[in-house]
Picture 1 (cartoon, rainbow, N blue to C red):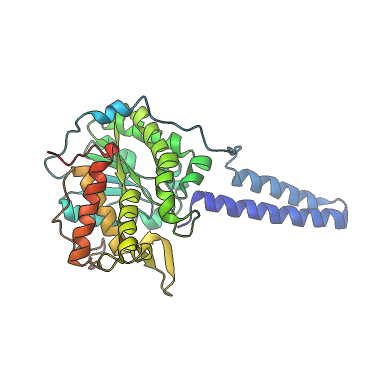
Picture 2 (cartoon, rainbow, N blue to C red):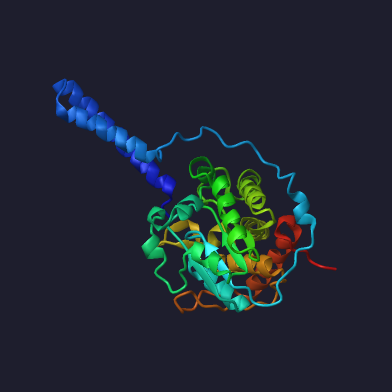
Length: 347
């Protein structure tokens, strides 16, 4: 998954290479048009790499959401039937997860995706979204502004690119979570807004499992508070990262839950068999869909079907009955213990 930040790093590297070449030419020829042209190229590459602005040197000041927490103590009205759902994001949304969720819930959905797309790039328009044409070659594509203007969607789910720290530092993630929430609240007031908390790569330090709580406190919560503040209403958390961490923690501590023995068993494999450290396999996608279902509908997912189809109509690899049940139980335990979902276990 190529993010906007990754592309920017490539441009910075190109600028450094051109600068070195320019210095060599300047020393060799001591003037002339070749070194001057090189210096112009350096300037243009640096401007492109920085997005024509100076990048912040540190994370923004921590926001504890103290002015918003009372919003999350109110009883959240829950839907009684299928909720037409809109998904805005990238490959950690993908095409298969919304398709599996729709099979669980019986609802219609639409989406807009990109390759490692940030909320900022989606806000700027298709030309700013890497992989826009490829990722949205599906009948479920719909422009997000058009979708909100239609007022046909009961749920608007957005997520941010990973690495999340990069998104906050370089892609103004906190600002643009607020921008999208404000847009949704203004154009479709009856729509519930959700923030999908994903995860970081398995290879990213520190330890993947230990890092997830800190990522929430320092990252996802900051987006959530900004979004709720701009929407002037709760933006509900879909805590997939926390659910995934709980499942992995139990599996690794007990020797396995069904076919899940370690964190790697939730992630895809490359054609050569190498581990894909960020994209989930069918079992991981199923867990993501379960968490979306539990939060959007506020219902216990226990008993939901687990033999599902991918978006292209092929059969997804199904979890064993033992694993499916424990996935459903853990999802509900985490969702109902996290106040920012607006979901409680009931009496």
